[in-house]
Length: 95
Image 1: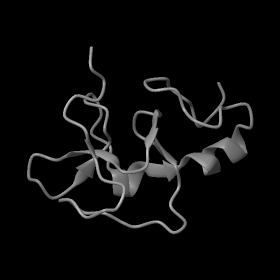
Image 2: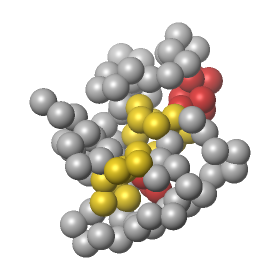
Image 3: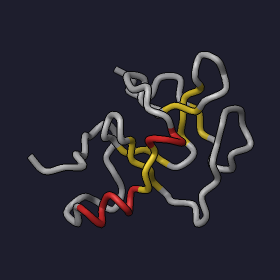
């Protein structure tokens, strides 16, 4: 199964869809909706073509609203890897 079916890559923010440039640009983001990591600049375009969604095909999280800097998440969870593994869920809260 292709977890990121239909995903695009645009690290410069010049492509379509609402985008917030981050400075400094993080290497990785974490989706608050599906709790998985992805490269900065990866996204899927919403059906209306105006919003950037989480690149995972089974998630409708927003890159703008739900995309957190991976390093901010790691500051809460120092055991998480420097780069997230594709498709792995990294919970914000411990059980």
